[in-house]
Image 1 (spheres, one colour):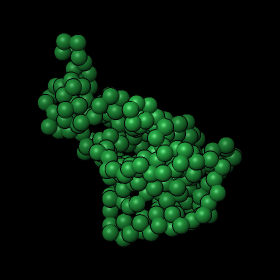
Image 2 (cartoon, rainbow, N blue to C red; image 1 turned 45 degrees about the vertical axis):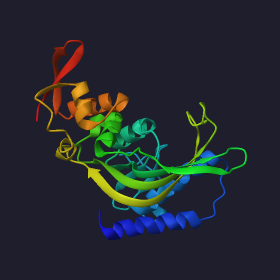
Image 3 (cartoon, rainbow, N blue to C red; image 1 turned 90 degrees about the vertical axis):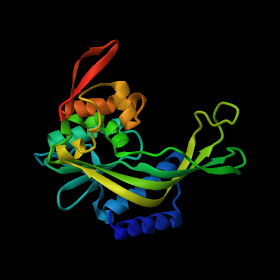
Length: 258
């Protein structure tokens, strides 16, 4: 990631903060701000935005791409869960000949400000310990396993600095559990990692693992937990980095293949 790329991203963040847009709901407004910055950063030409995607035979479809470039590339930007995009990506890969880039932002640094939902008063702003890694990003790609390594499919992970505003409307003593997000404001771009070839995914496989290992050992080496842990294992298994070889007690035993 070049310095000019970071400067361009910061400029777009500033422009989006100054834009006066009317939204029908807070939820739409919150998601649109980050999405809009990323869309312009990827391709700052509004004539290529929100384009209907034709099938391979030229017939129209119901799918609308975030970006469809004149060069024949589809760019889809998803700031939330990736599973809802699975059907759309499958259509692009199976029914068209376009190249497809999936863009999903990851957190490099985030500050959270808590807001009283009644008065709008900000209670506090603190740095969150949460941050993402390329491995945590790879764990999100399970819905797209059939296309990983396909020369027409690539993934881009921008690592962002964000300010997040959340309502104090949850459970617990401090009303933070299961609270609702009000808005995410992108502040800057730290770096970006693009994965396309199979080798680029496998480059992030932890080579310091023993030849045979359990999910617990994989978690220790990657710091992944829960669904992310097992989804990452599934992705690397599909890419041929590991395979199941039996049991170690009650735990599944895996073997490295690279």
